[in-house]
Length: 176
Image 1 (cartoon, one colour):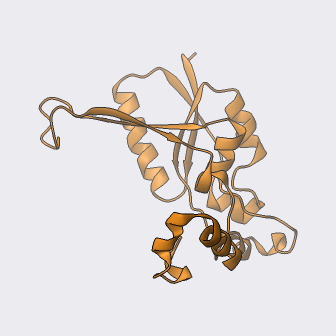
Image 2 (spheres, helix red, strand yellow; image 1 turned 90 degrees about the vertical axis):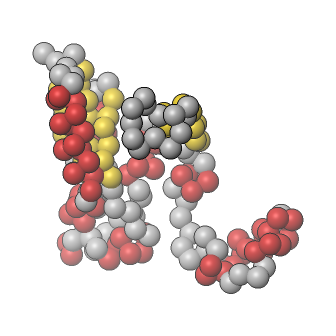
């Protein structure tokens, strides 16, 4: 039996290609793992009304970690129009599966390492070795959608935040 069970979540579009390359690297390193496929992404939204099916979340609870490719995300109104005809007008509401994963599995920190390796001709500078920690659940990552932004949002910001004055020269459609 493999040492690790890893949820394998290719998702949509380039996610499949990225995951194929990831698997080639892991196999080349003889990484001892069992990769358990999970359904996630736009096709599942269109056919089932859920971009992150419950079966995938349950499967993930039994694994050590997950590898995630990429997903398609669209505004709720646009997403609703792409549901299968039998799911139209059934009250399904689109939520980004990546936001759901962050919320349900408490994935609050995104680590972004950046390191220069000796001999790599693509190094910008040889001494780079940093890690950026990014909070992953607030602001636009919180899953709250406003599209287009209501005028009330700008009215409150204009009235209460002094730095908003610099945006007065732009129209609402240019801010977001």
